[in-house]
Image (cartoon, rainbow, N blue to C red; front, side):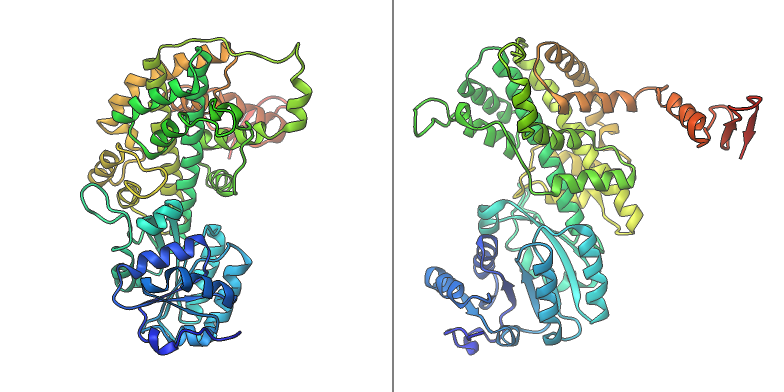
Length: 482
């Protein structure tokens, strides 16, 4: 590795170093440079990337290295190193290269979208080498990283005093001025929280898309639906994603002058965090059905061979439903509340399982600004959790209990009407079914228990006494208790 042309002495006492000069790494480094006392050291194996970065932004307080020992030597103690490299092998490689150069108590922060089991492993392995490791979710995209992201660090609880002065100034600020960053918990809680954030993002994107489809089925143009979303965003529904939908739906096609939305291919994919959320929920026994349907809606949209086989002229279905705008809005708002609660339920259960000590009120406060799922109602959600930290669901507490109950009839009516009108709304339907199951005193899962005992001797539980029971189905049909 060739050393940078930047003299190492110019970075003496750098309070933080950033490994990785990609879009997110460069944006976070520039954000840090505006707020920290001293230069921000940058490292990349490719000297050309360092040269390009410094040519563009060297006057903003950045210094660059392609020699790792020189980079580490330029940092003040305890060293704080932010990794902004692709998840997986590159993170492990970076840690392996840094470990011999670091001292006890130095801090390594992984700011990528790492899978939480990898983060849990790295927290433990780094601790064995005296390194304090933090897995930190970063939300807000390139502009958020540059101007103020939501940051979700988790890991060694002793680290917060050292990194708070670095992270709080660069984080987004909520309306009350509070920075959208805190140590959410121990272990892999930071990356798990970001994974849940992305799962909720999947759900809300799908719910907005379904509301769009319902409104278009009534004969509206994309621009007209965008105007409707803009009105929703002025009220209780205010959110970054709803605002974004209102913006993109009014965009004209640069090529034809028509509506751009009508020229966009209806096949959506993802980068893995939605699937990770659904898998984690299955492992923890938590229902995230709205998130799951959002994930699988993308899968169905991309099932090209199957869709092509069904899209003959005689078989293609056409939407035929026109519902009141207010009813669609109330259905969307109800479903969105349920989606957020499903994600927070997963976070709560996982925190209890892994012993992370995550406080929902603190997490929700982080999500109030800077991140993709920021929304106006999260201020009230954070207050509910602060006042009722042990509640299993913020929806069971006022004012949300009444809001959800008032909107649930609209959600059920919209789901039923549009299914009959050939408009698929899997996420809305999942939200209604989820909430209805929670509110039902008797569920058909009683039959599931009995059938599992019939073919697999898995036993069943009774409503009138404790324990597990089994019927001798192939014999005298007597009941035994275990």
